[in-house]
Each structure stands twice: as structure tokens, then as C-alpha cells.
Length: 399
Image 1 (cartoon, rainbow, N blue to C red):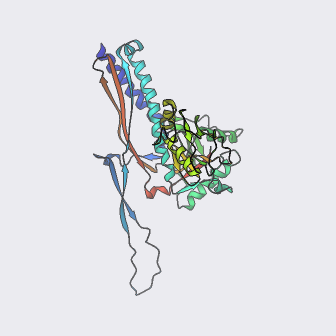
Image 2 (cartoon, one colour; image 1 turned 120 degrees about the vertical axis):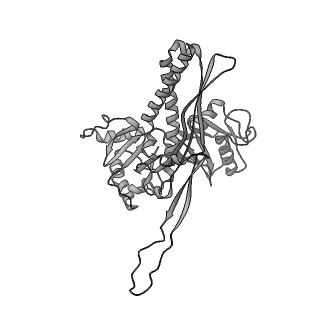
Image 3 (cartoon, rainbow, N blue to C red; image 1 turned 90 degrees about the vertical axis):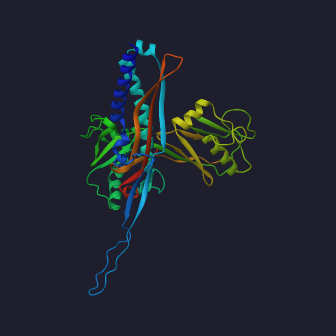
């Protein structure tokens, strides 16, 4: 009896997992897996690139030798370096009492959602590797600032973005797409109210939300969030910085309270202490007090945040987190700026991706308990090759 329960659970789990993930992986629209078959062993896949950039159109001089330009090739690699897993225990009585198919389907569904959100965030984060960006300066605003995706700017964005892509010698007549978040889609829907276009009635498989001026729209709330925090002035005691509800407080003496950050002798020292506190780097107990377990998990796993020190500022990246609420209570005029989402616009399938292992349900029995541990492992890698970079743009959406 137990074997039939286990088999029913496992089969239902894998079936539901594959069904949910295949329907919901939005990044599938901007990634391709053409090199996956080349990965037989090891952790890298090579691809050769032919460089014709030095070949140019020359003037013919009759009866004179022609000049031959040089061409070259180089190797580019995808590294499969994202080794991840999901795991949970299941007691045999839980399987029996919940019913093998119901428990298996529910577990498969929830694990697939978690896996697809992580993979969407990872693959879509490669949007930053585009050759060009589209920001506020491209619609007549300020260069280097994200564009406010509101009903006033949307007509400018959807007409000027293809124009900028075309200026990069990209064919924009077909095979275009946007990957936006839910709030950007909501603003588009507001603009279209009263017009004979029904985005709400479109199928939402793989996040599909209709077509806008020859480009398919897909929605993912796993886009990468970026923001800069100015810190040119040394903070004063009790100044705070908040990232997704996690609070850091600057103090003159580090004390013992989780989230405390020591004020340094100069602004650069305080900045370095805050970066270490955000990243959970060395210095815990001396230059900062480590966060609670729950807040550390939120920053490192839920938001996948990384802070980098710059000159008078901190650059924050939250991979796959969507819109993140950030705040500060500085006594100085320093503040957060350029809060943005990294969205995608351009040709589909421009990000090369590899899934070396996926949906490999590994069931291991506890030696002294009637409990099975279930693991789903996957190995992933992604890269934007040089000849694909010009085919899409990173769209900076104000967040």
C-alpha cells in the first residue's frame, strides 16, 4: 500500500510541476535553449563568434590590387553556475490521509511556482546586458533616469522604443515583445479604457497579455530592481535605511540590536559598513549587528539583494524581486534615486539559457522515520552573446 501511495504522490508531483512551470515561465519568451544539447559534460558551453567589424565598403580603383580587410573569431562561453534545489519532507501518514494525488498535485504546483519565479528572475536579469537602454532621455526627459510608465508617456514609449531599436539596424517588423510588470500593464489598460482593445480578455499563458503596436506583451513580477542610495554625508545617530521592510539604523556605538550599523569616521566608512550589513559580509559584531534570521532570509533569498559601494553612493540590485519599497530617514539631503525595474523590449529569444538538470524528483527515506525527503534540483546558466545584444534593449521603468 505504501509503495502505491509513494508512486502516486511522485507521479502527480512531477506531472503538476511540469504543467505549471511550462505555463508560467515568462522568461521562456526571451530565452532560447539552442546550445543545451551541446552540454554533454562539465559546466561550460562554448560558442564561436565571427568578427566582421573591420570589413568595410571600399572604393574600386581599376587595375590596382584590392585591399582585403581582416576578420577574426573568438570564443564565448555560457557557464552553468546556478546550482539550486527545493526540498521538503512528507510523512507517510500525510500522504495517506491527504490522498496521494491531491497531496502530490498541490506539492508539485507550489514547488513549480517557486522554481519558475526564481528562474524568471535569473533569466530576465540578463536584460541588463543589452547593447542599449531606453530611459527617460529617449522620450525628451533626463538621460540616465528611468522612464515613468504612466498614461502620458506610454504612447511615446511604444512608438519611440521601436524607432531606437531600428536605429541599431534591427528589423522591427516582427517577432518583438515587451516583458513588463503588473503595474506597467495596469497603466496600459488605463490608457486603453474605452478603446476597442481588450487586454484583459487575452490569454495569460506564460504571462501573455496581448499585442501592442506589433509587439507581444508578457507580464512578470520577477523583474530585477535597481536603486541608488546617496551617502555623501556622514549619517548621524538614529538615521535609518529601509529595504523591503528590513531596517538598518546608524549608531555611534554598535551595541547589540539587530540591524545596527556603526557610524564611521567619514561618510565612506559608514557607507562601507552599510554595504557589509546589507550583504551579510565580514564585520558582524563590530561594524554592524547581524539581522534576524527572518530578515536575512528576506534580503538574501526573497529579494536576492546585493549592495555595491560607489563614490558617495550605494548601488542596490534585487534580482527577480519586482518592485521593492526603499526608504531612508537621513538628517542630510542624501536619499534614494533612480529606483527602477529592468524590463525587456526587442526581439524574442535573445538570451541564451541552459537547464542542465530539471524536474529530477529525488526521494530519499529517513533511516529512522516513516518520512520521505523530496528534492528537486536544477542547474542553470544564461548569457547574452555579443551578436544578440543589439537586438533588444533594457527598458528602465520608474519604480
